[in-house]
Length: 366
Length: 124
Image 1 (cartoon, chains in turn purple, cyan):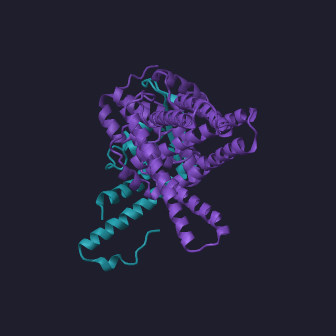
Image 2 (tube, rainbow over the protein chains, first blue to last red; image 1 turned 90 degrees about the horizontal axis):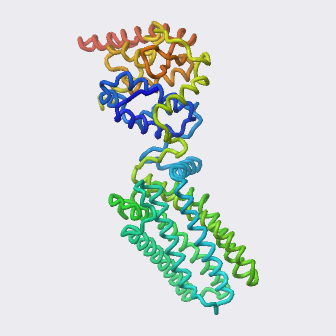
Image 3 (cartoon, chains in turn cyan, green; image 1 turned 90 degrees about the vertical axis):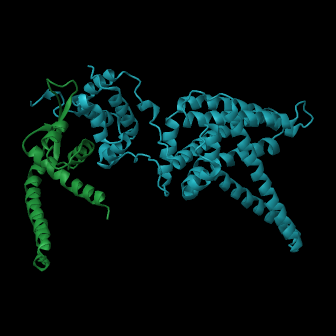
């Protein structure tokens, strides 16, 4: 069955299909089928009909507001996300971001896993046996470079669709330079604050026994503040990776201002536990166990944890990028039909057995 | 006040009544409803009709079935009033007549400077 819709109408239905991703597939296809019939009947004036239907994203929101889907699915993530988001809402939007390009992220995960396990093992071994042939800084340089290239690819898979995720070009260099610069500045700032606090504590004549604890608390607070500031400029770093010149550092700073509560919720749930686990595993590998097979096992475990942490951070940052830019959250990949449209209609006809009342197709009344 | 916003709210409230009134005449599909309501002063549009039908079906005021018409290449979804919708439409139309008469009266009276006569009147 071929409806032979004008290409503009087909594009409209494709956008509507993506925007209705939150609905169960049967219900989404029923809506699409009904509108396909509407557009087919008005084929001669397709442009006017499309204009009268309004933007597909708005129409999808109206369907959801009307209770399509039984009111069960999450509300459609929209451009200019509200400032206050529940944790459930944050996680559902991060999940949607992941679903939008998860096949590509498998490759990123594979690269990260390989690089992190190998470098972890080398670093653990070097920490326990410093006279090894390979200097630690070379391992760190290789590890950092590979991780940054993989993260750059992750942002491109999540936020751009030009098929050049793994290209190492000028924007890759900008992303790497920006990320390293920001990390170095943050670390330097945290160290400077801690030193200043230590000097102040010494001058104030604080008892020596209390100094290490206070110093550690100051260092922790300084690092937490640096991490908070880093989160605010992550959308800018993602913009460097995907060459989005319209999102500068200042835009990122301003755009995240009201959304930090939502971003921090996602970070606390998705990233922080993995970071703490990474810290514990590294500590155990270097401080608790003698050099041997244990380091290889810890390197494997930490590689998995660190890969998950990097991907979770990239997903959260990509979601924050969308909140700041107003870019729509993509439709989950499984819901994107690669079939010809006629096949979609045939499949929908079969499913009409579930939708129709009575179950079989009835005769038209006129 | 934004007149477009006010007009939009006005249309939104009336659209449900228009759809139910059209379906009082029998079972129809989306485009058919739209064409029947074509002279309804822009109360219904392509973009507002289908979400409204979804809501009315969900609320139990409409029932729907799919059918393949001879002249169509795509199955159509036909809507009809449910028992609840049937019961509601008569009451809604009565209330609308009272409401519109009240509003029209108020406007007419205010035009002629008889605002005091409007006070105290209510619609049931």
